Amino acid sequence: MSQQYIRVLAPPWKTLPAVGYGGVERVVVERSRALRAHGFHVELIGPGVTPELADTTVELHRLEKIDLQEAGPLSLPAKAKWLFSPAPYLYTLPYLRARRGLPSEFTINDAYRIEPWNAYLLSARFGVASTINVLHGEFLPDRIDSRLFSPALRKLTYGSLNIEYTEFLKRRGFRAFYFPNGIALPPGDLFVSEPDDYVVFVGRIDPTKSPHAAIQLARKSGMELRIIGPVRDEVYFRTMIQPGLVPPIQYLGELARPDLIEQLRHSKALVYIGTRGDPQPAVLQEAMSFGVPVLGIPPKGFSGFNDVVMHGSNGIIGKTVDDLVDQSRGLDRLDRREVRRNIEMHWTWDKVIDRHYNPIIEEVTQNL
Image (cartoon, rainbow, N blue to C red; front, side, top):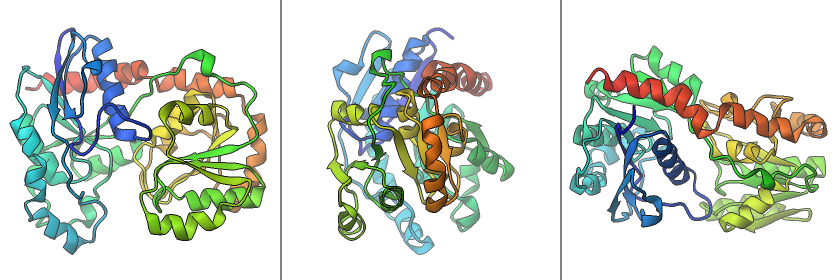
């Protein structure tokens, strides 16, 4: 597959490369670099891309960063109003203007998040048959008015970040592939065999990430908790998080990348208690790449948590906060070297590309 062309469309409101906290934009850059290392010629289209991302096998097209409100998890009337407004069409304008400099054979669309109409518009722009629309969020066709869910959307190809959601889409007649994210393995000298006696929460400070549940766990277990991440919901932070910031629980803010890594790699465990499906939380793989196990509760809905975290091997899984308090005693029995080894065996970008991406790219492109 040497010198096969791949186009990657990054979200228009992100900045590449990521600064501090940033899941999707970090994945877009790391994936592009990994595909480049596997012999592909990558064309990256996105906002803020800089020359440091380029080499002889990567071509960069910079878009102006735009501010558009995402449709997100809206009610059906609000979603319908958004759908028939100019917003989803304005969203695609930067890509419509992008120069098509390379004869790309395969397009990875990370740009639209969970809005299927954006997937359709961008796929139509860059080639429906050769575009895989990566579902960094989830849309549930069972909950979408059939009149809004055009048959044209069923002709698109979707990439799901977790196995359960992939099978869900297939059962409903969609063309879907398991298209997981990998991880760039950190240097071995960052591995900490004897961690400090604290656990961390890393993520957005909003209800969907549930840092309040991490505070409940820390209170009941007596563990020191350090909360790291940007505040996305000020009301939630003031009412649900600030009152719980009593030692040994503290909020460290959104840290610069090197400081975040230092806090994470020295921690005893990463606390992850999501309340809503998270397609594939990048923070799980990142923590485990440093040998840090996960102390968590699988979120409701579809989530890559269930693909990545294995109870008693690289994490401790509970059903409730109280259950997790009892289970947390098992953290001391986990081998941090085994946690890291699991990442090396299954979740590096090399492994993910070889096991998943190459077969998908071959299947999609051979039918063009």
